[in-house]
Every structure is written in structure tokens, then in C-alpha cells.
Amino acid sequence: MKLNLERILFATAAVCALVTVSCKKEESVTTLKYFSGTIRVNLPAYVEPGQTIHLSPGDLKKEDGSTAIGFYWKIKEATVADTVRRESDPLDISPDYDFVVPDTVGTVELMVGAFASGYYSTVASSATTVVKPGINRGSLTGFDLFDDDSLITDSRDGKTYLTMLAGDTRWMRQNLAYEASGIRCFDSGVMTGLFGMFYTWEEARNGNVCPEGWELPSENDWVELAEFCGDENAARFGTFTGIAGKNMVDASFNGKPVWEFWPQVKITNESHFAALSTGFCDILSDSHKFRGWSEYAGFWTGDETDDSASGVYRYFHVESDNIFAGKGDKTNLAMSVRCIRKKK
Image 1 (tube, rainbow, N blue to C red):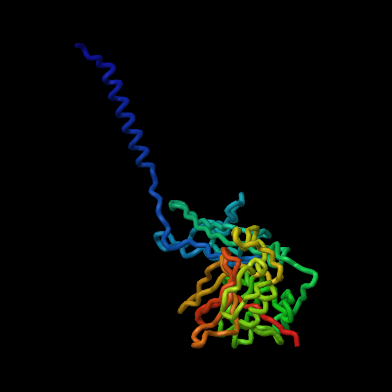
Image 2 (cartoon, one colour):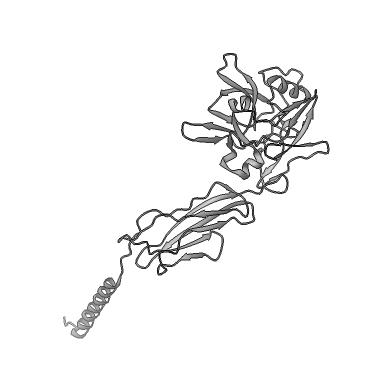
């Protein structure tokens, strides 16, 4: 059989050509490097419109220790990024960023990116919840207001509170937000303005947190409130049955119900008490942890257990139409406070 020498030579030349092109491509590939250090966006969990937050992108460096790196910042949904420094800019141009919170409510995600020639770009992001202050004109909506509401002003800080009358006792309709002691709601000023502070029993009972002329309600006061709401068998340290919904408000936070729907509970807020599901706060040795948001509302009473080891509180749960009595550590558990003023 005869071989076609011309075809063999052509095929050999084509293979050599492919090898040559492949070698040239491999030689032209540049291996990108990685920055060392950390890139970050440290946003608080809750912010309010117009608030300015100063942010630093971290401590990125090149392999030689240089910080000649470009940075940009961008809200995730935005089409344009804000480049605060280019790689070629003088190093005295800061990569920091003053983030002005947009006039909106809900979740906002902010991104920061770093870039330099010969290096892989890197990005970090963080989300925050934008909260507008004000009842029914901000993030908290659907909060019942009534013609017979009374408004009081705390002379210590100028904060105002709606109040309601239950029998001979006037109750605050909002959680106390006096900041001389206690823990801010989710460590946020704007959240505290809507949902109040968290106090330990010691702070609530002995810390003079209530405004002048007001006091922490006792178990007897809670029994009177329960009777006012229709529980004729209400007793100290017992469960108040069938009246939780009469004291809960069907409000929303950033468009989401504060109390999730539960068929056993009909929320009417007949008493005007307006309980909100702010949960509790556990105080640890070097920090604190919030829990029970959208599930529980807890309020300290001025009473303690017979052995004086624990403080007594009243609490609501999303799944029940009852108001329960509980006991908790006097210094390691924090919750909401409603102050009262009795007729003289």
C-alpha cells in the first residue's frame, strides 16, 4: 500500500503549528496573586435613615506589604459604585467610607471591593435593617391609638409615653425606654425608641427607672389588670386565662407582623395594653444575647419568689391566649418594663 507523503507532511506541520500556538498561550498566561489580610464591612444590625456610619474596609496588603490598592463601595442593588481610591492614588487618600443610610425601610446590603493589577479582586458585604422611628409613621405600624389615650412626658429625658386606664390604675402602653440603666433593644437607639429598654429585676425594682410618680407594677396590679380584662379567677403567681389577645396589639414592624398569626389567639387589644413581642435578653459574663423576638413579651413585676432568689415576671407567648407567671435571675435576665400610676 502506497503512503501519501504529501498528506503526512501536511498533517505533521499542522500538529507542530498547534503545539507552537499552545506553548505561546501558556507563556502569555499571568498568574494572579492574592491579597493578604481581611476585607470587611462592619454595619450595625439596625440603622435609621440619614444616619452616617464611618466604615473601614480592613487591612489588605500586597505580597510586598504595599497598601497601594483600589477600593470601591456599593449598595448591592445600585447600578453605580463609589470608587474612593484607585491603585495609582497617593496612599494618603483613605479607603474609608461614610455610608449615609438611604431613606427607606427594610434590609440594605452594602458591598466593598478591592482591586489591583496582578491581583484577584476581592469583595465583602454586610446587611443591615433600616428602621424609621415613630409610631404609625415609621417602621412600627398598625399600633392602635385611641381617643382616651393619655400622653405623659418623662422629665428626666423628655421621652413621651402613651398610657391607658385599667380600673383605678394607669398603665404605660409602651415599654419604658429610660437609658440611665439597662440594655438597648438589640443595642440600637432607633429600636429602643420603638420597643424600649431591657432591664434586670434589680434595675427595674431598685433602680428608680420609672418616671417620678410612677412605679413598677406588683403581682396584685397584674391581677387587677387580668380582672379588668375578664379573668374572674385571676390569682397572684397564677396563669391568667383567655385574655392575652385582649392585651396584644396587631402591629407590624417593617411590614411584618410583630405577632405571627396563631389560630388560638385572637388579637383585639381591648384593654389598650398593646403588648409587643420584644422577647428577653440573657446577660452573660462578658456579653448579652437577645432571644424570643416575635414569640414572647416579658414584663418584670415588683415581686420576688419566697426565697428571694428570683424576680417574678409576666409573659405572653405567641401560641397562647394566656398570660403566664415566670421567675428569673435578678441580675442575669433582662426584659421590658411597664410603669403604673395609681389613683390617690
